[in-house]
Length: 201
Image (cartoon, rainbow, N blue to C red; front, top):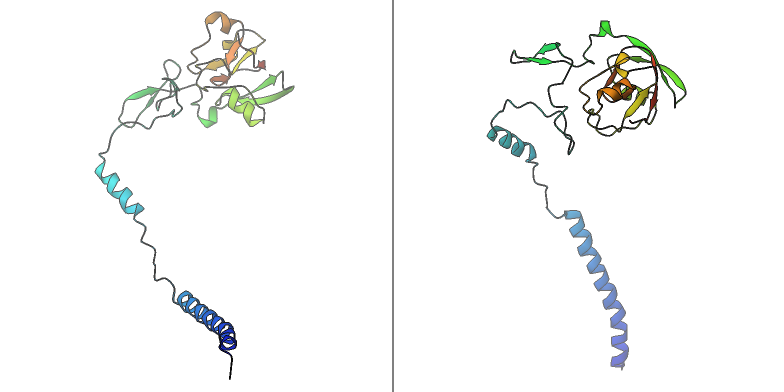
């Protein structure tokens, strides 16, 4: 006669194997079937269209300066030289700046950047700062609107206004301009000259 302990010791490994096979079968079948979940449709475009149709149209111009603390200058309508005007969509006129030059009237001037040790040709339709950056130079600046002196430089050849035209600079007084100081972010070349960048009054 078989010992009952021997029978249970034989049954246990067999039961374990059978349970393992059953578990693997259930996992395999459920993974083949999938969960039945399907993603919901994207309604973001519909929501945006509904919101856009609910907001009335305005005639406000797009702001030109989104910087925090950017000040009043640099809005949608460019500030410019006296006497120059351009026509807006509604038929009214606005001043144009010194950089608003037709392509066929663009002139080039030799400008020596003393600290960089190079003389380059600059056009009269872009500020000195932008054209210096186009050369790959890391020139000082902050506001880019003529409302600080971070980008200031000094033209050694005489009064700065003999060589550049400023577009709405608000920081330099007449004696400083006469001493050759300029704000490179709003200064457009009008002649050849030498400039030391990073020089503030």
